[in-house]
Length: 215
Image 1 (cartoon, one colour):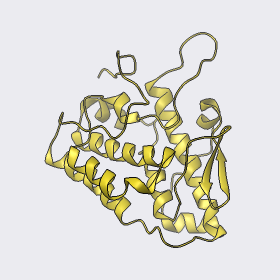
Image 2 (cartoon, helix red, strand yellow; image 1 turned 120 degrees about the vertical axis):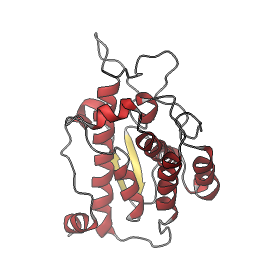
Image 3 (cartoon, rainbow, N blue to C red; image 1 turned 180 degrees about the vertical axis):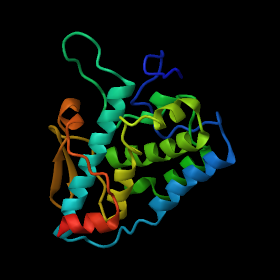
């Protein structure tokens, strides 16, 4: 059994996702992190998408909340006793799996230089966390390999965010009074982690399925 780091001293799920590191650095790690930056670089920020796409944006963000909640709940189980605040929303999940694995500096600095000024708040955190998650996967760290073999954890928790942006999402801020503004008049209630654990899954993130859901 591989040890996870949810209870390790100094491991903070709100840790800065723009950190860089050299641990487990390898060409594959660099390539995976840069591939996420490439995807973000291909996002078309110009078209003002019509309301037809707002439904997919809401569904994708809800799926991001669902996947994040499940991963966080597994990595940071609720402590015994009365319900307590749990900082699950926009948590850096990669650091909870293996805090010594951080994305190579070149990928993080490139994202910050080329695209970092396009987002603030939640979308910025999620974009950098997606780069960190890609680096974790490519590192072949034993902790992630063990998790990837489980059937009770959803796929890549950050893929819904990338699809959200690729389909014209304007980015999103941090919660205000329990709601996240997705832009263009759409918003999503974040709710407690327990509520998100029970959300209906959206497993097919393909353009074909999302187009169908928008009709």
